[in-house]
Image (tube, rainbow, N blue to C red; front, side, top):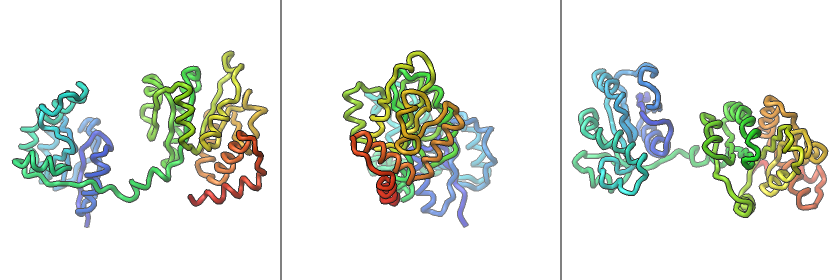
Length: 329
């Protein structure tokens, strides 16, 4: 029977996913991650006699909780995968990062030594440096599923400049629904701190720094995306836009979804080299999830769009055969 183990961490991190969770499973525990960014009072009941692993940091407001768990027979372990106890090695690090380490690790060292029955570290260097703690060496051992997970994700992107601020904000609710509905999607967008706030809390979102055209041209020619979005809201400035997003996305081998307004309406052949969708969030969510789940259709559209962009018209049957041949990749 598997024993219970609780990993206290600021959410999932490299420390938890590469080291602690797989290691605990390998030695017979069923690990549960507890997010220390939440107040201890909001936790589910703790089972007596469990193993509790502190990952990297020790938030002071958890001190009483851990002390009470020890009284019920729990064993507390501390894990670090950087040198978090020596203030001398922090020179040159950003001051916010230095202060976090000082506040949540260095000045907590004495209390950690009182609470913890064991220390785990990630490198032989740390074993040697902190030999007085008699640490156990834990090596990175991620699961096969974790290593292969990135290849199974369907990539979705919206590549737009700040002139599309309204569309960027409008799309956030659509992406939130998509990401919560489909665990195998990743979304990518360009933006600044304002965009980051709009997409905060949505899982599996990457926000890229803006590039000039030459940088974007070189970069976008070297990457591939599965689905690319081009929402366009009706306003005076947008009336003069051309269908250049179609060319951007064809270069990335992506299947595009476009607002059913000019310049895309009358240019995109719906269901052939793109999808045209009314500016309704529900319809956009449905269209994205349709292409997420229907791989052959997604690839057929992408192939047709790319062939049109380079001026070679493939028949629908040829595109469908090519898409089917890619479906197992």
